[in-house]
Structures are given as C-alpha cells and as structure tokens.
Image (cartoon, rainbow, N blue to C red; front, top):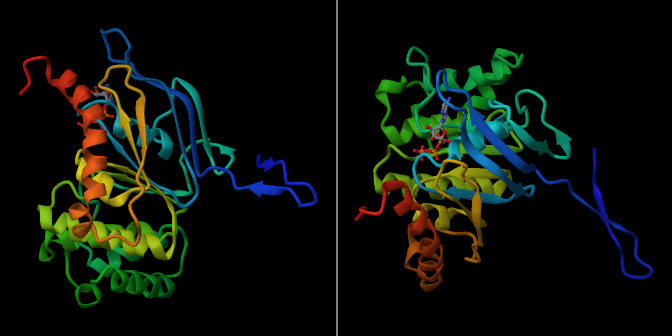
Length: 282
Ligand SMILES: Nc1ncnc2c1ncn2[C@@H]1O[C@H](COP(=O)(O)OP(=O)(O)OP(=O)(O)O)[C@@H](O)[C@H]1O
C-alpha cells in the first residue's frame, strides 16, 4: 500500500498521511452501443475523497453521476484512468464499499430483521450473530419496534431506514449513495438526512452522495462537487462546505452562510443544467 510522508519540521518525526479512501484519477468511461459510435459518458476526470469525508456530487440529469459511483463500486470498468481504494488499485468489486440506491433492495418475503441479517449471512456470519447485529442496527436507525414487519407493512421512509441498516451492518469503510432519499417526501428526506449525519458522526466513513438536490448536498456534505453536462462530462467545480457540525439538515437551511453557499454553487451548476435542457429551457 502506498502512503505519503510529509517533510517534518526539524527535530520531529515524519507524519504518515493516511491513504485516500477513494482516488479516481483521470477516469474516462465509455459505453459501446450496438450500431452507434462509442458513447463517451465521462471524459478523463479526477476526484479524491479522504477517509471520513462526506462528498456530494451534483450535476444535470444524465451527466454521469451514477456512472462515477458505479466505477467506484467496481461495477463498471473505466476505459481509462485509475481507481484506487485506500491506496490499493481496485480490481473487481469494491469490498470496502456499501451501496445504497434510490430503489429499495429489500426482499418482500422477508421481515425487516431478516432483510438486514441476510446481508451478513451471505458473508458467512452465523445466523444467531447476524440476527443480533441486525436487531442492533434496526434500533440504531429507529426501527426497534418494527423488526417483524414485512416491507409492504412499512412506510417509504421506514423502508429506507431498513436499507440503510442493511448496508451499514456490513461495516463498509466507504458509503456510495445514489439519490438514496429521492422517492421520499421533502420532510422525510430531511429527517433521513439528519439520521444519516448522526450515524456518520459516530463512525465517519468516506461518503460519496449523488443527488439532484443542491440544498440536500450542502446540508449534508463537507464538499460539493459539480459535474458538467454530458457527454464527456467531468468535474468542473469543488466547493468546501464550511458549515458547523453537528448539523440538523432542516435548521441549517436557515443559516445565512447556507444561502451564500447555495448562490455561489448554483451560479455554476445552473449553466450546466441549462445546457442539458437546451437554450430554450426556462
Ligand atoms: N449501460 C449504458 N449504456 C449506454 N449508455 C449508458 C449506460 N449507462 C449510462 N449511460 C449513459 O451515460 C450517461 C450518464 O449516465 P448516468 O446514469 O451516470 O447519469 P446521471 O448523472 O446519474 O443521471 P441522472 O441524474 O438522470 O440519474 C447518460 O447519457 C446515460 O444515457
């Protein structure tokens, strides 16, 4: 594993710098479409995420946000560039990452408890241990009283909580989230955002969070990166979010600094969104 060392001040031992959780370097991603020229979705672009850092990716629809996440998960092999995870080149699936999608991935014939436990059992954990850990995670996401419910007996927000427990129970060091709260109403999204931040504060994972919602991105993140309109999309903006933590994702939207950040980032994002919809877009 490669680690960097910083030159220390005279008389001090060199400090070892932890490897980045995720390093995408000059990543290019293309899709072969039968009978058509190769579609170059993502142009060579780079993104670095430190251990414990929360980074949101925003950009116009179809620009390549999910594609970048899929490359980080090892579900897609880039046509060019390097994906490095905690200092090691990624080969195959990213075993250090947990992936939460917009759509529920719950099995309708299993209870909430079994849906979470199965995530461990398929990895070889004994059923009794898996159930105990699943129970604990369902409590941590606020579902202690709902462990015996089937997915159709839960609300959309509750199903999301089960999905979160299902991913977190496996202890990933990296969390990849693709519009995870997309289908939920605005209030439930904010509640889920605050829950996510509370869990993250207890055990800071590197998070890559894709969203269309710039307010959500600012409320949650340490950094918001912007992708340009595709094809050949790339990262064109990287904004540090200097809002204090802990944050309540509803209250933080009232902070004057939140509004300044929103204006600054939207100025750049708007130009890309307009490109996607054409010059006549409202
Ligand atoms: N398997 C595929 N084959 C061909 N083209 C693809 C494939 N997957 C994605 N694309 C194209 O790559 C581009 C990026 O897609 P992607 O899903 O990453 O965008 P996105 O930014 O996540 O979009 P949205 O915000 O609408 O979810 C799009 O133009 C899409 O049509």
